[in-house]
Length: 287
Image (cartoon, rainbow, N blue to C red):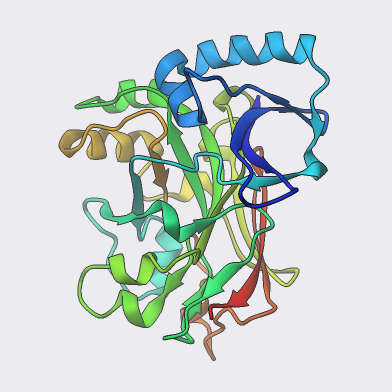
C-alpha cells in the first residue's frame, strides 16, 4: 500500500491530512485520535493502519492526487537519522576507507520539502550537492533489537533527496551544519509498505539531474544493510513510529565530478527508486 501526507492545494495554511493512495486517488484517513501518519503508526501499527485503509478504500471515492499538495510522508518525525558513506563505490569515489561502523548524523524536519516542492540553495554557498537515497520509516518502537528482529520494525520506504551543502558539511568533522539548511532536501512522495516495495537488495536507486542519470546503484551494494543500521541505531536510541532513517547515497555525487557539478537554480533533481516511486524537486535560490 501507499500512504501520503498532503494539503489541499487551495492554500499553504490548509490543514495537513494523510491518506491511502490507490489508482491515482487519495482516501483521507485522518482522525482526531491520530491526526498525522506518525500518530497513526504509533496508535495502530502498520497492520492496523492497513486494515483501516482497505476499509476506507471500499467505502469512499477520495480525491485525485493531482488536486492536493504532497507533504513529506512523515511531516512531523521525532527523529531523522542518516547514514553517511554507505555504498562501496561512493566510499571509493570520495577517497575514503570503507567504515567499520555506520557513520550517523541527524537532520531536522524543517530541512525537508515535499514532492514537487522547490528545494532551496542556501545564500551562503554555491556547493549545494545532490544525493539520492532510500529512506526507511519505522513502524513500531525499536530499542536494542537484533538484526533478525529489525525488519519487523519497518513500516515502509520512501525516497529522499538528502542533499548536502558541502563546504558547511566540512567545517568540522560533524556533518550536521551542511545537512540542515531549511528545505535543502526532500522526502516523498509516498510511504510504500514493504510487501509492495519488495526487498531492499533488489531496489535500484537512481539520482537524475535534468533528465541525466548521475547516480545508479542497487540496494544490495550498501555497506551496512537496513537491518544492520536499525540494530545499530536501536542500541543507543529508542526508535519510534514515524522515525526516518536515510540509508546513504550511491556514487556519482556532484563534488566528485571533474569539474564538480553542484545544484543551481532552475535544475530539477529526481530520486527514482524501483518499487518506491519518483521524488522530483526543482531548485530555487533562497532569498
